[in-house]
Image 1 (spheres, chains in turn brown, yellow):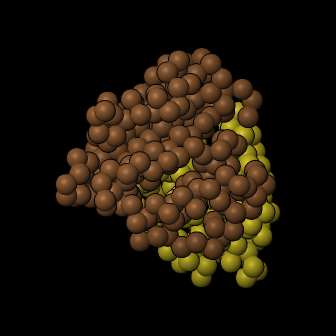
Image 2: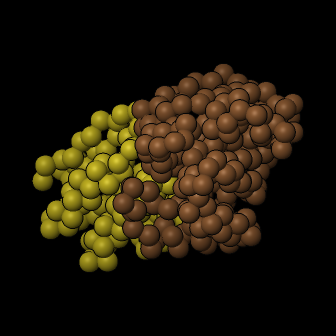
Length: 193
Length: 124
């Protein structure tokens, strides 16, 4: 199998594990540098495409928001200059796919294996909350958090979880002794959420 | 006081704070790379406005989209207006949302919950 952090390896992996994705239409797939400028380009692309598609507005807006938050997360937090790993410098993969009843926004980016436990616990914690719990957490963090040194408000995952109303699907695929590939699948239901 | 006018960009909103005209408006899309750098001048302006506020202040927010980092800074801006209100200079907030944007409507309700200032929620 090709490396998980290449488009071929990534798609092979997720199609094998999440085979519902195989029937989906691919709206967008990208593997490469993820920077603010590139995020803006995707925002613009998505806005234009969704104007043309026959998709309900609330769903369009949610997909857009998930995409922006995910890309900005990667752009801010992606590991830079990783020796001995094929990813480097804010690279990531994003796949937006459309199924009969849902959009799946799949992202991948390299993270330090040391950090995965923390991330895992945080995401599991979010999945354990219901909408009310997530809203409460969001408001608490909104009021109490200061911006991190990377300029994030620590709210991205919470907001994605609460706005989509669906469990976040994620895993960490070890790449070598130091790095893992963080895969996140966010679901936006196409019916009335 | 000098008005603060910032033209909208593809990732930042239009800002018009003009005490002479009685306009205090942020509108558009907010997803800048550096939220603090964008919103800091706005917060500083509101703090200066505290020393010479109008007899009443209506803050207008008409957002098409904002990312989570912006939500924090928008709250910070609103807090500065809340402080003004608490000091005896009345402030109300007009929160606009597209009629099919349920999330934006809810965001307005959430801010209204947190900020102790009267909010008007307006669909358009």
